[in-house]
Image (cartoon, rainbow, N blue to C red):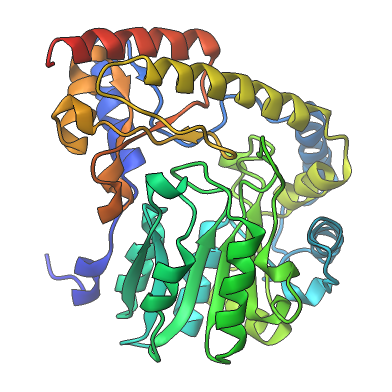
Length: 389
């Protein structure tokens, strides 16, 4: 079939491919423990669901403004102002069907062929995919285990060139669970403020899921607000993956271009979903606190368990709901062990290489599953690995 040449440059998100294989095995009668997909296993809080039902009954079932409902953008602006300590105007907010479109639209808006983008490796695969798609060049900055998966700022600085036009940050980080330090972010801000053509995408979708320390946004640094696109959303914090609502906070001029891309693609975000999202931000946060406390308990269980498996070693993540264990001691490649654990142990996980070249020798497990299932998965992994050592 004839397709555009640029489609060859487009990547994918391996989690959905592994999920499909796992579902096929389940259809054959095999019990699979799902630790591959980055989706909270909790139900969306009741007050949010009730707000959506009420919104439908009140007629919020038609088109809305491309940039988002004014009342929703106002609440987001207030939330970002309060949590990041910066003044935000509703005109600096664009609401999209999930947070991914903000990555997509910003890259389409800002980058030209040949531009360079500093992007994390390991990192969320859509970053590198979209950079390649538009004809720009991803320049990978490594997040190394020996540095607790934080940025080595000296190494980072050496990668910056006159062609650098964008820097992508993700904290708390998928897939390692690391949290960027204030010191590192201040150093990156200095680099950006010396070059008026560099834009920062700061992916902060896990900002509320943090266990040690605090979340700190580069947009909070003086001079960085207008040079940063904050990406956030509802999928992870409020267990709303299927509701498809996220947003970007950026300077007003950039917001106009991003909105224009939305007009040309999705038109707008579902209106009743946005009303539910207003309730998510303004309503009680008891369920969110309970979810985060449960994630912390699961994190402790899975890290201890993985470190007791021969051939594995695992750092303690500070945020998100992923662990990224080193599996070099097993003698298997990341992809080999991913497939082996799925077929032999019935445990679905992801190869570290699904997140870029610097994921080699690692696996990613999502602990968005019950403690009971995590413990069973650990037992299965241990037994399966013993057979190959």
